[in-house]
Image (cartoon, rainbow, N blue to C red; front, side):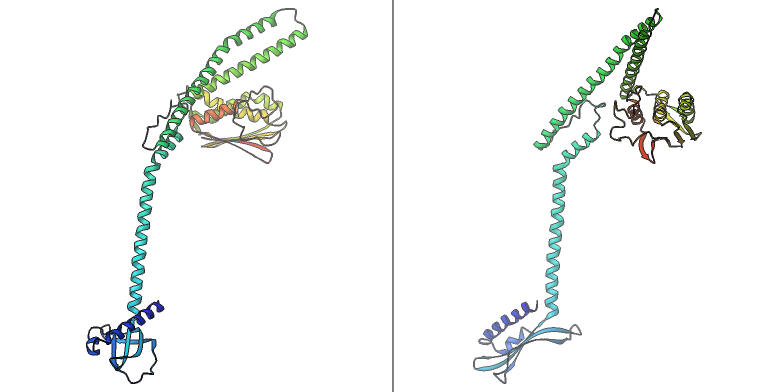
Length: 383
């Protein structure tokens, strides 16, 4: 700033020297009080630029000025010229310019931000609407999204593709569901006939030991197929929400009833069973599904507990935790609740129990969690 002010003073010096050629000092001083011209005494006086505190009567204070003093000859006369410029005024002017420029820059920045945000909101609004519709889409509830056209060609192409995709997926879902239903229903009759014929075959005589073994294997295979068929039919009914009735169910009573059913198996494996059950805990669900859910978790724990192992059951107001001794390493959480995933060597398991449990939890908004620590499997059901 000082260099700029000095340049101004030097430029003003040239102007003063030119004006003195045509104007008398008296008239010259009359319209610029910052310029003082007196008769000079010596041509050898050097030009000086310096700062000086000058008293300003109007403001009743001393103000720092930048002063230029020099001698010059005009019309054969020697003049001593003193020109002073307030530093405060210059600083104030500079600060004002900076403030104005800063204000203009901030206003422009805010304006650009608002304009850009408004344009972005208008341009991306159809896309975010499509995204929201996709997030809320359920293939089992809706035929298709039926996204409406907009003014943006790219979004229109996207919406058209999504509409066709969701419609096609819904149709495939319906076909798959109908196939499962039809297959399960159609299998019931031949399975019943097969079991009936096996029973009649057992009543014939004489039967050799080899024939008896074959009949036993047929009976076991038929029962396993019948169980698989009923389980697939149950999954279909859950997907179709064919259990609309809800009633308060005392969870403690259901667990005690199930434990009595598994008492013999527990004794055979010498399992130590401990249960801490809250008497007031109740869940609102279909009674059949509630028994299936709790039965699957308990039977799974008993089936996979090691010989001479232990099972702990803790029922609280809003959760049920079942912990059992592990016979191996931790289960894979990614595959745990998927269809036909077996986690042991039990040949009687069809690998659908935990998937059914997960489906029931999804139906009623429960959470089922698995953890493994200290060689213990732990399933937690949050109501």
